Image (cartoon, rainbow, N blue to C red):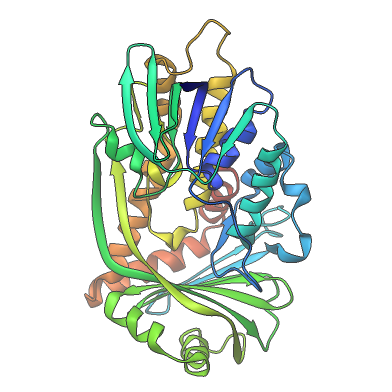
Length: 390
């Protein structure tokens, strides 16, 4: 006995859940397959995201943003970027006529609210806990078998299951290419002695790229993208030693720190696919593209994948098959430029600042200072960060 759906979304994280919610007014029947429901950690979640204003509006249109706990969401009004040899670049929402450059909030906060919205959605069946075991594509659709023996038949399977996507590995037509950075992202949250004034900081250092992201009530979330050896040194430090190391690395700009979430680390790598679609299969979010976290743009790409795919599928007339390759390629074309641009830009910046050549140090820091002195260029970069386009 099998269950039939128009769409089966494998992965109920931010990209997969937002896609399902974005299709709430469609005629499509949807199943979301997820291994475990979201869980809010005690205290603060060490995994935070910088959500662009465009994607905050996307979440607002889904009815999610306005239900988030406002006391755990922090706007970014200014950003200061420092090179490793005197370079500096500053962004200001006020100078650009904007309310904010981004919003900083916990991943689990967004996921929990999306999940609650899915529970109330009439055209969604939540299959959780559930793990996929086999995927096959037939003339009329795809067949997904779960570990518990249930069989799901769908006209389209969406892989929203992360950078190590199971759906992608089962789809021979989609080839993934990985480039390891031999780096880790070390994350932790701190209480700051001095006010951060809603400013995000980023330093390009010899030992990696250090970012401080403002959180409410004068807290700060750190992401330190650093070579593996240094990352393991940071992770081995006790709380007071880590606080001292992180404060010193940022020039004590926010005074002394108190650790409020333990440090955690994750490996960094670049991942590209030849294309994110195949017969009856489409990829969204990290399953389709993984980038270096220096831009803070990863989740914004995933939300835009969900928005565009929902628009493509929702616009199909009733007689069109949502798994039809022509419709999926329309999505692929619409999403070809932005992920590629962000992947190559972040990859190039990472490689440029990893070079210890003194001549290159002069060039890259001159570039930061030149951009800072040209308001037109600086504002163009802000417009892209805010709207996803120049």
